Structure formats: C-alpha cells, structure tokens
Image 1 (cartoon, helix red, strand yellow):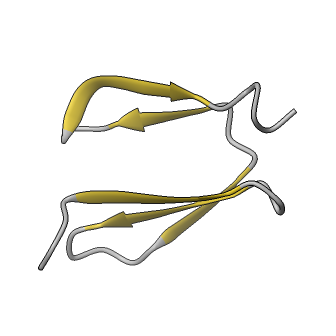
Image 2 (cartoon, rainbow, N blue to C red):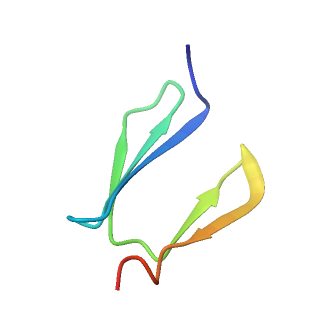
Length: 52
C-alpha cells in the first residue's frame, strides 16, 4: 500500500517526518504549521501550541 502524504509527529524531539510518494523522507524541526500540500490543499495543522 502506498500513501500520497504521511506525517510522523514526534513531540519529544519536536520533529516531523514527512513521507511523500516516490520522494525521500523530509525531517522538519519544530515547525509552526503543516500544510496538506496538493493532497489536502486547504488543510493546515497549527503546531505552535504543541511545539512551544
């Protein structure tokens, strides 16, 4: 099974791993927001309260 966009949110090191189809995994450190990109174009996840 394949996904178009996946997020692994790890609150302790405040990292997000972004998995996109046919691309290497990207790691972000303490981002304020995550967008749904082209998969969920109007979706925005506000992480500012989680990663204070």
